[in-house]
Amino acid sequence: MKKALLCVWREKLSINSKPKILISACLLGERVRFDGKIKNYNLSALENYELIACCPEVDGGLPTPRLPSEMQLDGNVINSAGIDISYEFNFGANLALNTANFHNIQVAILKSKSPSCSNKMVYDGSFNGVLVEGLGVTAKLLEQNGVKVFDENEIEDALAFLLGL
Ligand code: SF4
Picture 1: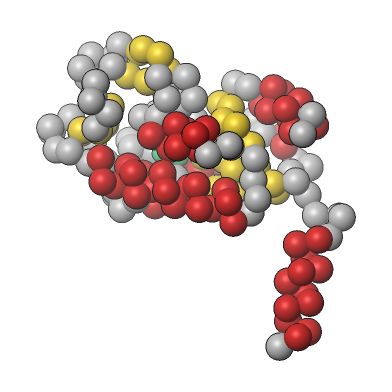
Picture 2: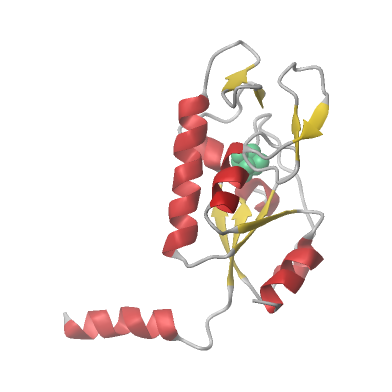
């Protein structure tokens, strides 16, 4: 028992362990996007980091593929059929925060324009393709709890931020 505990602490304290970054699972090529498609991203700049994947929508209980969803003015999230899926979004956001806390993660790289993951622009809730300033549900919760969120176009900024911590 003591030996097992020692191993856990050794792992936590290891100076050789890579710094960890929370990352949207879809950026890693996992089939979790709402449309069921896989897209490839160049993440070579992150090879010296341990990437901890999360997909708040799937982790929150939504299927893949699923209908597109957008945040409304009141902060709730509905899908294109008009069904309120705020519960699943909030559940997944809390799981992502728990994951970040468990791994002592201070930086996340999440997918832009997502109602869960975006760190600056989201669709306006009309399902007409109009982007407005705003954070996705998970990005907002992470930021409120001290995890700095970047998107896939800001990888260099994320690494610079990490080096400055
Ligand atoms: Fe999942 Fe976020 Fe990617 Fe959407 S943007 S598929 S919620 S990881």
